[in-house]
Length: 214
Image 1 (cartoon, one colour):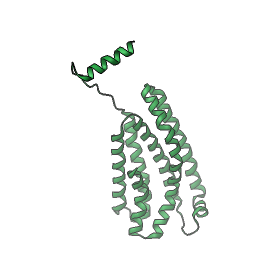
Image 2 (cartoon, one colour):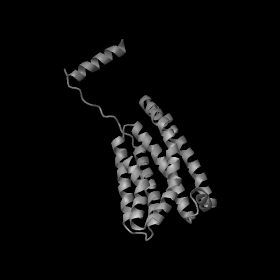
Image 3 (cartoon, helix red, strand yellow):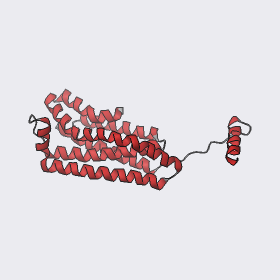
Image 4 (cartoon, rainbow, N blue to C red):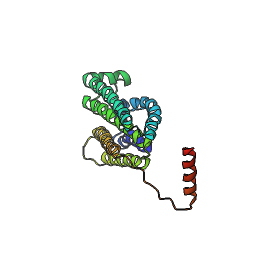
């Protein structure tokens, strides 16, 4: 959660510190295209994780992957519609929603809309990782992407601070989704723990086996 908040809010703070409140306000408004769907996605996450955990515990791999695939396809369709709307009438819609204080760049809006879809797909893959007990690996992915995003925004590779944040958000989303997809394709394999003869663990296993046989 800390890494997620860094990706969504560190850009505003850094732009405010270097360029000023006006540019930071522009970045905040543009990233609302990504923040608002993320809030709505919380409801999906609430039901998705228990569902995936149940399927994983039962060993129903096909249904597990089908659930991820359907969710990602729904996200892609939604993000595609948002990106199309931003391409056709994005600046006008943003001014209706947030006022005419800023002149919004169509490319920025489309980039954030695409990044939103990629990030929500990454969030879906994250639920798959949590359901499989890959919490530590998933957290490393998030932390690494958050650090990369901050470094990208701080280092003036692109002269415009606003453009760096927009490109950085899209890049962080793509990187995070790629890492979590790699993790998704390589699920953890439970390791067999040797049981010492005469130990408490051996007695518990014998009792469990007896109960199951009974």
